[in-house]
Length: 276
Image 1 (spheres, rainbow, N blue to C red):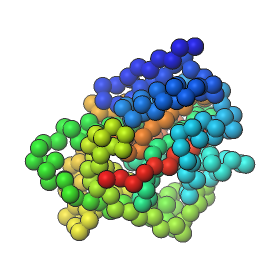
Image 2: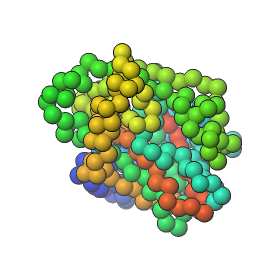
Image 3: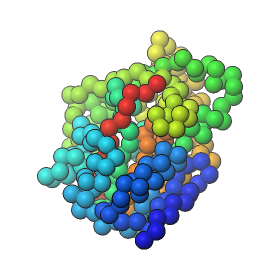
């Protein structure tokens, strides 16, 4: 097989074909890593991976972060299950966010494998925050330089958090964990050096030294820029589909449009580096 990688949207996303992820040599892995760094998310279809295969592939990307909140796949703590039952109405990740921005050293990214998918719906949207930053005026870019933002997961996963009030509450854990971090509002991507807008609607609370009331008008504007359709791509899943994305340069949003159907995804998260 000959690997081919093609873009799937103007600013974000690529799809790789002609590969079996179980049998890639080092040059093949390097090509995938380069595509993820440049395009933010890479999609691969029709992969027959056991949990052990999934873990072995992830280890070729870096150290694995064990998820503090999602249920683990039985016997494989490295694999977090992102699931929604036929009877549940709330999904996981149903708003724009980037994973682990609340950690002192945020994760590089995730490798998500579809195990069970609904007959229709359940797509995931991704957005390029490099393209969003590039679209800002020089004046706003100058304003953002030097700003830092406070991120937390407590209001999402805590005892009184958003999910605690939904039908996902019984599946999630880590309610007692307090996760908070401060990061630059504009970061440089550790691989490409590109400037990236690093705030997100789910986990960013306010600018450091600002109140939330003062922060929200500017944050809301930045969020509206990140959500512009021209910066997005859309992934349609089927069992055996796999996505690898970069948390530093993208947001994602899991569509919740498949009520009455089950969806099960296996996620492995890869450790990152400090942001600056």
